[in-house]
Image (tube, rainbow, N blue to C red; front, side):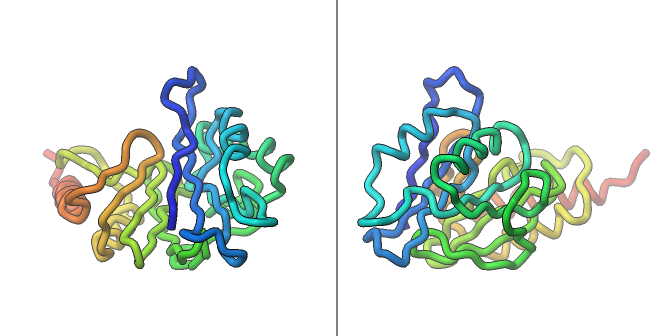
Length: 202
C-alpha cells in the first residue's frame, strides 16, 4: 500500500489532510482511494500529476472519516471530475454507500476495517489496515493527554477497539503521522479516558 498526502501546508485554504491510497504495483484490481477530500481545489491538480496504472481512474472511491466541512467540502468537485463511489458512516454528506462498524473495504491493494469512533462527531470512523498496522483516524481524538473531560460510552468502546489492534502508524486528519510507539500512546489515552469517566463529581 502506498500512501500520499495530497494536502499542502503552505496553502491559505483551511483543509484537512487528504490521503491517496494506491497499490504497490498499480495493478488493475487495486482500488485508488481518497480518505477525505478536504477543502483545497489544488488537490485535484495534484491528483492529475500522479501515476495510477494503465486505464485506471485516479480516484475510484472516496472514504469520508466524518462530515465536517474541512474534510468534505471538495466532494462535489471530486465527483464531477472522477465520479467515484463515496463511502461514509452517515448520509450527512450524501454517501453512495454507508459503512458500519466492522465493515471491510478494499483500498489500494489492502483491506481496511471500519471502526466507529463517535466523539468528535457522531459519524466519525477510523480505518485500520491489519496487514501494515496503519490507522487513519480523521479527527477522532486518540492522543488524550490528561484524565479530564467527559466521554460518551460509544467513544470509549471505539478507543478500546483501537487498543486491541497492532498499530505501527497513525495518520491524522491534521498534522504529521505518528510513526513510533502508537500502541503505547493509545493505551495511555484509554487510561486517561477511563479515569475521567470514573471520576466521581464532588
